[in-house]
Amino acid sequence: MIAWLSAYNSSLGMPPVSVLTSVFGAFAATFAIILCWPKLVRDFGPIGGFMSAAILVGTFWLLNHKLPGFGIHPECIPDPNGGAKQFGLIYQAYRGACPWVDMGTAIACGFWLNSLLGSKTGERFTLAIESVPRVLVAVAGGVIGGAITGLIGWTGANLFGY
Amino acid sequence: MHGLRAKRHFSTFIGGAVVGSLSFGIWPEMWKSYGIMGGFLTATVVIGIMWYMNHWLGVIENAPGRLWVDQGFPIMGAGVAWGVVRFYPNSHVSQILPTLICCVIGGLLAGWAAHHVKQVAPGWNEPEKKEEL
Image (cartoon, rainbow over the protein chains, first blue to last red):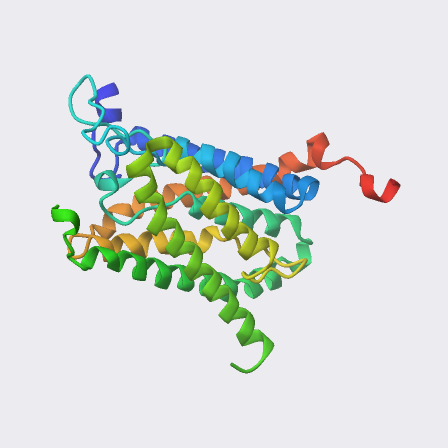
């Protein structure tokens, strides 16, 4: 059972335990940010936003996204069973060497649904339709910005002899 | 650039492009160089100033009473597009789909849960102090 739960499952695209950790990691970050961020901004103004960015996003980045093997241990922190194992709650295929799924996905979806549920019942459909172009334009902006940033890997420049 | 409508979309587009670029240009390098504290520092600096630009100053359009479009949407798009371009031609795009679905499910669950928790949490139901003063 434990072996099945922790082994890579090709029909799921990840180990079965990673489904649980990914959903819960996304849930925890989104829930805490929806509950705390608007309140901190109301209490402290823009300073509250900076506090939230540090405390909430910083902490949940560590919980959800830290990968082993970078940073102060570039040679990888070895697992007792060999290799370097997933560290963050949100599963990343190929240890991050593929398109990145950010917890911003969860946070944005959560905020959107939360504001939808908070609106009046009769207006929800109109409001959802109104938000679609804004969401699409925001995602398109992110796609262009991210794609251009990804191009830095194409320069092929070997700096400092490496 | 004619009309307020187009200008607001233009503004949202640019806000999304900048936050996506900063997140994925800076975050991986900081965590490779400084480990966990690099991630904390990047969260403070990048998300802090980008929240200020996109949501406090309102570069990403969010009129009062409308559904909230968070800067998480451009970060989602940027993470995927950055990886597709960065690791081309071995991007393994289809591999991220399960994680993406898990993230969306987790986020929607949290949005639903937060809606109900807000109705009972005392901190969300205290009377406005500013009006009393």
